[in-house]
Amino acid sequence: MKETTETTISLSPATETIPDLVRKILVQLGEDPNREGLQRTPERFAKALQFLTSGYRQDPEKLFNGAVFSVCYDQMVVVKDIEVFSMCEHHLLPFFGKCHVAYIPKKKVIGLSKIARLVNMYARRLQIQERLTSQIANAIQEKLSPEGVGVIIEARHLCMVMRGVEKQNSSAMTSAMLGAFRENKQTRDEFLSLVSTPKS
Image (cartoon, rainbow, N blue to C red; front, side):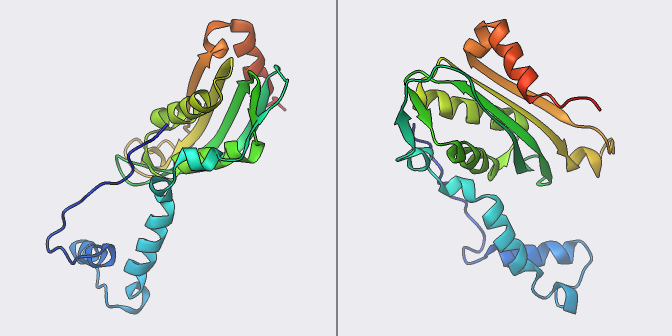
């Protein structure tokens, strides 16, 4: 699976950098980018943004390299409560929560830490939660060809919490069910029961 991750953006003038643009934004907001508290903010923002979008510069093929193993195991593998931090592409505000991933192997398994790294890779891009959920599931399906894959993400979006409807306690849940997880209710129910939070 190969994804195109390079995007060419034409800036005017061509020499403008992210810090240059942030200084202009600060001025448009009515701030003084030269005051003490803001003098290094443009550079800090650029570094933070580069980290938060570092998934564009990662290749899932390289991420999986050396971590796929032939194993005679055909029961469900679940990695739950993977922390997710991403950026909403509509408002450039964070959304964050938990991701649960499950698959049923068919002769091949992947190192468990690679699942968390895969989640991070796709989360560190400008995203919507629905696409993020599907990308994780599809990457595992394409690499391992398992009997099925299930992915659930529950996240809070600051574009809802801080602005707009301002619903501080709202969260969004998305799921992607492939193969046995879509076709077999018993498999799907087992996954949901394993990742559900017990009520106190």
